[in-house]
Structure formats: structure tokens, C-alpha cells
Amino acid sequence: MTIPIKTIARLVNGTIEGNKKIPILAPSNIDTAKKGDITFLANSKYEKYVYSTKASAILVAHSFTPKQSCAATLIRVADAYSSFAKVLGLFEQTFPPQKGVGHHTSIHPTAKIGKNCQIGDLVYIHEGAKIGKNCIIYPQVYIGAHVKIGNNSILYPGVKIYHYCQVGKRCIIHANAVIGSDGFGFAPMPDGTYSKIPQVGTVIIEKDVEIGANTVIDRATTNTTLIKEGSKLDNLIQVAHNVEVGSQCVIAAQAGIAGSAKIGNYCQIGGQAGFVGHVQIADGVKVQAQSGVAGSILEKGTSVFGYPAIGYRDYLKAYTVFKQLPKLEQRIRVLEKQINENS
Image 1 (cartoon, rainbow, N blue to C red):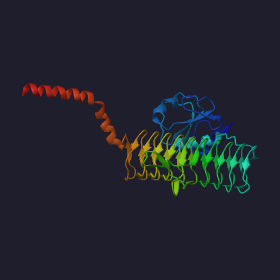
Image 2 (image 1 turned 90 degrees about the horizontal axis):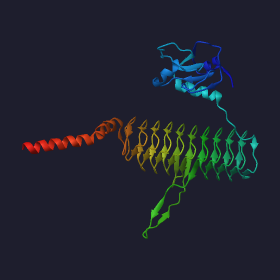
Image 3 (image 1 turned 60 degrees about the vertical axis):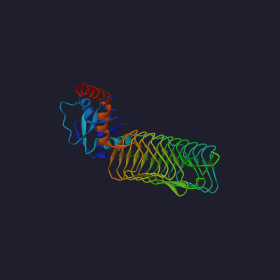
Image 4 (image 1 turned 180 degrees about the vertical axis):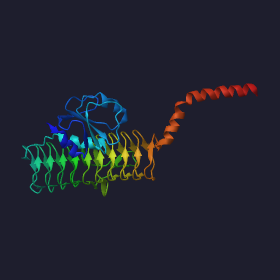
């Protein structure tokens, strides 16, 4: 694929400095780019590559001032990172299943399929399911009874959506994600065994949500497990029953959210972070990777770190002291010995 640099500049509302007739062949990393590639600079620690890269074009901020000569053409934009994301969209290649309905696919007579849907081989669509217009459903997807899928959504291979769950418009669900499996509910019995608590609620995923591969979102015990609009979940995430994830949240891989936790809007959650059940997390909270949230965070915009998680700056101060504990202990012992000798 070849795209004129002027086309890219128009897409990102950028200003070209240099050759305005360069054909762009592909996007690439700034340190490994080749002639014909376009790359970007969003982190100052990569600035050294601006002067050595073989890329033909680089997206940079309006405020960027080169410290030495640069062979590549610069495209100045308001935000290089988000602009590069738009450029990637120009080069994105998707391979949907064949048009229409594939082989060995089972669609219940009561299911309703919107116009212009593409449904791959070995898909199973249960009774009462409703699939919106322009949806792409890859092979081996299971859609349970009375499930609703919004317009323009994409379900990649192996996705499983249990009965009565809902997926909004323009959602993307990646391979082998499971929506609506039973929440982890068991009642201890007098004889030491556990009795299963029926999980009779559902899952609602609002519009413009993306869910990564192998992520699992459990159905509610009663009522709803809810993922609000615009949120993005990475791979291998566990969302337990009756959890609520606010709008425009981002959650990195291997995070786990226990039952009935409520995550506010615009939260950012790092990889392998864990939340105990029933906590309340305010809007805009940032949870660093591998943190353990053992209590509610009620102040908006708070950043936390550690296990159990405490204020981010408090953790860094405490960690500085923690690293010195062996030396501090040795100094205390020396001081104790001196005190004892002088007493």
C-alpha cells in the first residue's frame, strides 16, 4: 500500500516540513524504520533516533525543536501519539469472513440478523438472538439465547456470549473472550461443602467497548454486570459478577476485579492490578501495575501503588526507606552498642 504524504498530513491536520511528494509505504518504529516508512516521536527519550532514523517521515509535536539536522520529512501535529494511531488506521488490514453466512453455521429460526452481516463458518446463534446491522462474526463464535449485539460490532474467532447478555454498537470482542459465564458464587454448608449459588443476572456492554482476547466477564448473581461505553479492556482480564466499570476506562492485561466492585469513569488500571470485592473507586483514579486495592478510593484523580495500595508518592517514599532497611538496622545496632558501652 502506498499513501501520499499529503493525504496523511490532511488526515492528522498536520503541517509538512520537507519533501511534500514522498510516498509512504508503511508505518514503523522510529528505531527500526526503513525508507518509505512513517514513524512518530512522542517520548523525548527516543529523540536521538530522529537524527539517525531511515524513515521518510516523522510525526512530531508543533513544539518540537530539532537539535541537529534531520533527513526525514517532519509532519507537525498537535499530538504525535494520537496522530500516529490515525495513520495506523490507513494501513490496517482486516480479513473478515466471506460475505453472507459461512458453512456449517447454525442460526435458530427465531434469531434476527441485521443487514450486511458477515458470519463465518461454524458459528452458532441461539433462539431469540438479535444481531444488528453490519456486524462481523468470525468462525466458531457462540451467541446464546436472546443475546443482543449492536450494529457494526465485531466478534473474533471463538468468542462465547452466554444467554441474555447485551453488547452495544461498535464493540470489538477479541478471540476466546467469554461474556456471561457464571459468577463465582458458592455458599458454605455445615458439612464443609459448598453449594452453588445460581447466577441469574446478565452482562451489559455498552457502545464502543473493546474487550481483549481471553478476557472473562461474569454474569451478575442478580441484576447486571456492567461495562460502560468507551472502556477498553486488555487480554486476560477477570471481571467478576455485579462489577461495574465506568465509561472511558482502560484496564491492562491480567487485572482482576472481584465481585460488586464499582470502578468510576476515566480510570486507568495497570497490568496485574487486583481489586477486592465491594470497593468503590472514584472517577479518574490511576492504579499502578501489580497494585492490590483492598479498600475504597473515594477521592477523584488519586494515584495509588503497592500492596495493599497506598498513595503513589507515599509508596515511592516508603520504598526508598524500605531498600535501606538492612543498612539502617546495622546502624541502629552500632548505635545501641555505643550507648550501652557509654552507659
